[in-house]
Amino acid sequence: MPDAAPAPTSPSSAPPRGSVAEVFLAFLRLGLVSFGGPVAHLGYFREAFVERRRWLSAQAYADLVALCQFLPGPASSQVGIALGLSRAGVPGALAAWAGFTLPSAIALALFALGIAAWGGGPAPGLLQGLELAAVAVVALAVWAMGRTLCPDAPRATLAAAAAAATLAWPGPMAQVGVIVLAAALGLLLFRQPAAEDSGHELPVSVGRGLALASLALFAALLFGLPLLAAARPGWAIEMLDAFYRSGALVFGGGHVVLPLLQAEVVPTGWVGAEDFLAGYGAAQAVPGPLFTFASYLGAVAHGWAGAAVALIGIFLPSFLLVFGVLPFWEGLRRRPGARAALAGVNAAVVGLLLAALYDPVWTGAVRGPGDFAQALGAFVALAWWRAPPWAVVLGSALLGWLRVAWA
Image (cartoon, rainbow, N blue to C red):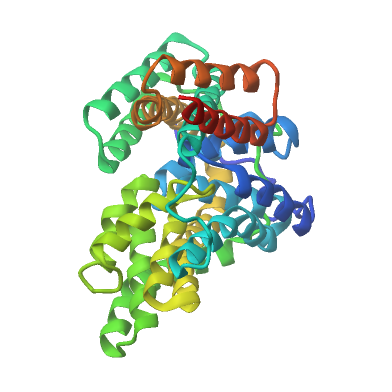
């Protein structure tokens, strides 16, 4: 029997529910303190927009995270763009991206130009403290999402298997394979009746015409920019092409994009190998998405103009994909087959987060009993004392510095 048709009321034309200023300030606050990489960012977003501000339900947020795991590009940034789009339309999407991205992008461009007074980098212990705070943030995100998305033994088992498989076969393509397999298992194991309007929808103020145009532009730029760069050489179009392809073709985001960027900027002579590594180290010490590393690379090559071109190039695919896919996603996710597959995918996403909690978050930060105690204290502060994440992050950084100073 074919899947039931989606409910007649579609959220694709829902009006915005907030202001652009509200979205920008909310994401700016996160952009200034969101250390820890993409998995930690998802935890910050969940606490800020599901639990505290209640912009959307836990289930709608989980489904959105699952969708962005399917898309190439930086998943946490795409989730932020979608949240801004839902809250305040297309201007809200731009505001969410700007608030979350520009603090680290500007800091890295300043570092590249030698203006920032960072000296040899952050004070000893500060970066270690930030990494330990990320352990607590990611652990809390995995715990909270696991309780929601893995409420029974089959889904908990699927999550554990996804984590084991991801650790056994690391790499972005393995992650995609795990998600696809989990979707297939979900179709077999978690079949459910057709869903009614349950209040879990994520309103999207983008029509299907704009969605189709966004997908068409995504493909046109992906195939057209290399031809244009070959026909009319120039640093701006060549850089736009290089960073657009890096943002459009990488699955897994974060550290996975680094080999692609290195292959684009070092052999071409835009950035030296030593400068590339120095910028990567600086990128670890700033909050926000790691894709803002593009700002540093562009600034090294061509100053502020290069930083702007690189930043636009690497994030533009995410905007086009979110605008293009989200309006169709809301109708599709209510179909019984899609909901069953999504149940499997959500469980697999918990497994991917659990694997990331172990490696690289835990293995890169916890190096002894003192580190474990500090990470545990940060987790207790977040989970039971309900301390704001920014306070935990700053407190952990200060404690890391004090531990080194007193050693």
